[in-house]
Length: 197
Image 1 (cartoon, one colour):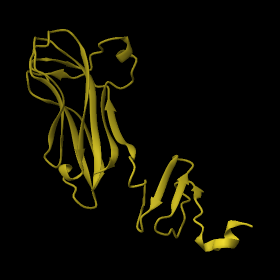
Image 2 (tube, rainbow, N blue to C red):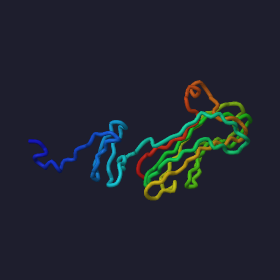
Image 3 (cartoon, rainbow, N blue to C red):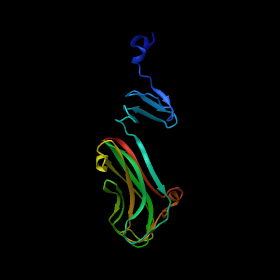
């Protein structure tokens, strides 16, 4: 006997398979769909489609560049800027990476980001002296929540800027080795959702 005969056709939740442009026109709260063009599983919360709130949403957004830029003195260099929508009660990992080479021995080298909430967080720091003319490829991550980024309810677009502070002069986008040289983007800034806060 079919299940619909036992519990009634209206009691069965039927998962929907669609595309991002053919989502159900009149979804109900709790309805779940799978989008074949984005490979996303989404749930309708009564007003919008979201990934499952109790799981990590994964990669959110990123920006990259391959600019070769001179580093002047110890003045922090703004490398990349990206506006990303942040949702309340979520936890995020913000990561950055780049290649650079000091032209003089330097200390206090750092990779960090700022956001429109006023947060400044270090992703990578080297306190000991970095020798001149030795290229480095550095990366780091910082985990925070939406409230610390200035979003305590709803959602808001926040602008993130990746900075490099080199203790002396030098240049950005120096390829330390063949592996890095093969990459198409030398500077990267990306954000991942790692779950509910």
